[in-house]
Each structure stands twice: as C-alpha cells, then as structure tokens.
Amino acid sequence: MDSERFERQYRSGLAGGSRILVIDDDELARAGIVGALGQIDHSFDVIALGFDEALTASIDGVAAAVVEAVDPTSDGDQVAGARIVQHLRHSTTDPVRIVVTCSVLQDDAVRRRMYEVGVDRYLHRGWARNRGDLRRAVLEPFAPELAVPAPVDLGAMHRLGIDVGSRVNGGVQATLAEGLVHDYAWVGPQGRDRFARRVRFNDAARLRPVTVEGLTSEHGEIVPSLRQVQRFFSWAARVVDCPPRPGRQSEYRPAQQVRMGTSEIAARLAHPSRSMDRAAVPVGRRALRPVQDDVSDDAQEVVS
Image 1 (cartoon, rainbow, N blue to C red):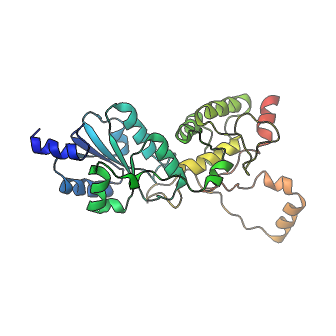
Image 2 (spheres, rainbow, N blue to C red):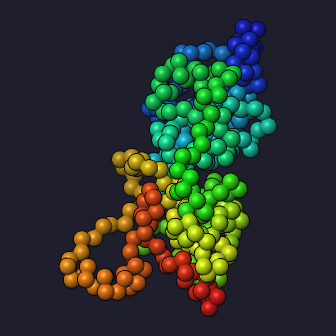
C-alpha cells in the first residue's frame, strides 16, 4: 500500500482495513452509494453485496460497512440489517465502523435493535445520496451527532414487556425459530409444547409477562402469553409504512375489517365475551389475529 493511501485511511480512523462494504438488497440504491464512495475517496476498495451474500462473504480487511436496516420484501423479519450487523460484529475482532442507512429513522423498533447490535452511525437513506453527508458518516473519525438515537415511545415498549434488560433481536430470532407467529389463521403448537416454546422464546427475549395494557397478569403467568409474543413480533419485525415491493406479497396479512350490520352489532353488544375471542387485535404496526386469549394460555397447558 502506498504511503498516501495509508495516510488517508489513518486520518479517517479506518487504518485497520482497505475495504468498505455496501450491503443492500436494493440494487439501485446500492449502486448509488458505491458510486458516491468511489468518487469521494479512492483509498478504499468499495464492494457491493446483497443481504444473503453479506452473510457468507469474508470480513477480512474490512474497515467499514454501510448497511441498509430495512428489507421490505421480507416475509419474516423486515429489519434485516440487524442480522447483518450482528454477523459483522461476530465475524471479526477488528474495529469495523458500521453505518446504517434507514428510511424510517423515527421507528423505535429499528432504533432499539440497531443500538443492541452496536451500530456506530445512523444515517437517513436520503442523506446517503449527498456526498458530504455520506463522507462524514463513513470517513470522518468523529461524528457524535450520527449516533443511534434513543426510542421515543417508551410507553409502547412498556406495554410489550420490554425493559432495559430485554433483548429484542434475540426475541425476534427466537420467535421465528420456535414458530410462534404466523399468519392470523394459524393454529400452531398446543399444550406443553407451546409452553416450552414460549419458555425458550423468553430465555432469548427476556420480556416481562404483561397484559395488553402493560400490567402484570393477575393469573401469575411466568412467561409471555402467545398474544404478547405476537404483539412483540409485530412491533419489532414489521416496519411502519413499509409495504412490500411490487412482485412480493407478505404472508403476514393485516386482519380484514368487516362491515357489520345492525343485527350483528346488537348481538356482539349482548355477548361481548363471545365476540372478543375472534376479533382482530391491534398490535401497533399490523394486526395479527390472536390464537387465544392471554388468560387461557397457561390454563390449557396445565390441563394438557
């Protein structure tokens, strides 16, 4: 390596490597950032990767990575950048500067998950098109104003049982691994098997068992109910105002609103408990139809 190139890398605080990764499944956005970085500084080799490629690529010699936080085409976890950043952190002991770009900066779930995995800088996707902002985010040694901001709606997190010791990324991965959330017509595991899955889920997530209002359950549940897991997953893995791109249709469909006639409204008012168990439960981002009520989760498992 020539001395001038090394000096530029040293001044940027990235002397530990010679490569910068740009990781995004959107080919057009990825090409734009690669082109901008190539014009800003010729001291680094800029490499473009998709999400799947990034999980298998070599991390040797990587000085920095620009990672898109959100993948709206995903049928599972739409905050795909969290898994990429976690992979980068665990694959090398070298200090890799990780810059996350995101079009939904105000999303509290994205903020919490990026903070958990150790993102260095948090940049709006639109700002990444500006060479000055991109240069500051990737190449400047100090940029404290680009640190990951704290979540704003702490009340929503409290109602989900999330506190300081919770691990949101671990909870999302455990939800998918244990098969605890599917579309709203899903029935899923029953009895002791379901309880064991919920125990393993909470070993990873560390949530407080709470009701939909965020209160401690009167029935003394020791792990989150299936309904709480569903609410948690919808908050943590489904991004606000982020519809799937054309050509992909998510299996997580919002519950359809049904227009009721006068007679049906009267019947539901007369028997509220009978109507509530089949109603769609609002879960913040998307409505998933609950499998059963919080109260009956452990009761049925004990019986079985």
